[in-house]
Image (cartoon, rainbow, N blue to C red; front, side, top):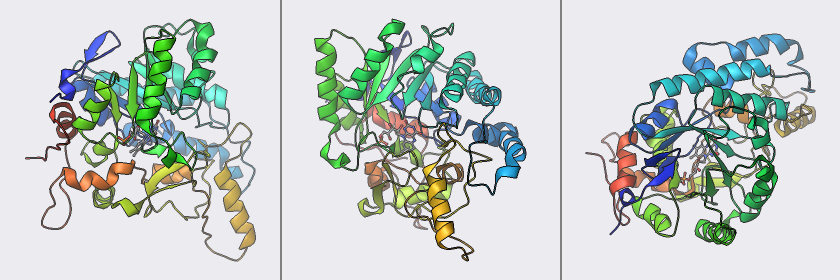
Length: 414
Ligand SMILES: Cc1cc2nc3c(=O)[nH]c(=O)nc-3n(C[C@H](O)[C@H](O)[C@H](O)COP(=O)(O)O)c2cc1C
């Protein structure tokens, strides 16, 4: 029976173990987690979501405080259009986060940055440009373009000296999205180096509607593969979403995938950025505890534990400090929902906002517990201790389990 280790991914001029740990914002896929993947010969991701807050947490900078001080006068104002990011600061925070991770990198693997277009930051083009270019400046091995169509992203970096040497890939959930992207970037004379195909069972935001259950990763992957073969395009394909065991991964690799991208299994590792008590919630989850809903202000469905404190909370929007979801005219659908509830309950000390959540605040505080569909199986990946909690795993253990386990086996920790 084959194992993942019988296959190799060729990317960035290297031969890699074909396991990619997907980006998990905000700081859930930490540099420590990505560094382990790289050390073990695979591919890790850091994420540049809420980069100012992440830099402050790790490097003692004051990006969030300084921005809040600058826009404090606007806190009570429902119009957030004046709240802007300084692209220079965005670049500085990115360079710190990426640069420090790359300095610490050991081993033969790669570290990529997950860059979500949907973080529009009240000036989508300017801020995305700053993020992409700063990541390249800081020596990142490559960039995975995520959450969005990214029709203009290649053009933003085509004059960068590393445009051709860095590994650039995109996440899509349909052949149509890939076709649009390929058409748009044709002018730059450069194909993506890899395409992650994210199916409906993934964690985070979904590239489907609420009818996600009607789709299937293997079918989408086969359709994209047929198209690329017909067009004579040789681009490594990396399926993602619901791949829970080494055996699941082998199934995709035998059908022509170059690697697999996985994430949920790593949420219960020591290196993952979630607080330990939240990791226990992931371990304990049953299938009924997991829902896909529309509370994210991005407009995409998102999968999460129903017990997430983020659902139904009514915090005042923190756009002056954060504001990562503000569109190009200073609107966020959470802020609109919050203002509606405040107007409807003028005497309430607190409101509850049911239809949207303040994604920035909730992700920053690890109160939105996003997970893949198979999170309910995490309890089968570790030992339950006498006090009822589960033993946390190491990233190395989970990585090696994917790499070496055959069939549907899952190796338990020693
Ligand atoms: C906690 C968590 C956070 C995630 N955050 C992001 C993100 O910020 N950007 C992104 O492109 N994908 C995100 N994802 C999706 C993963 O990168 C990955 O593609 C997917 O979850 C793989 O499926 P699996 O979790 O079933 O293994 C997230 C997934 C999880 C579990």
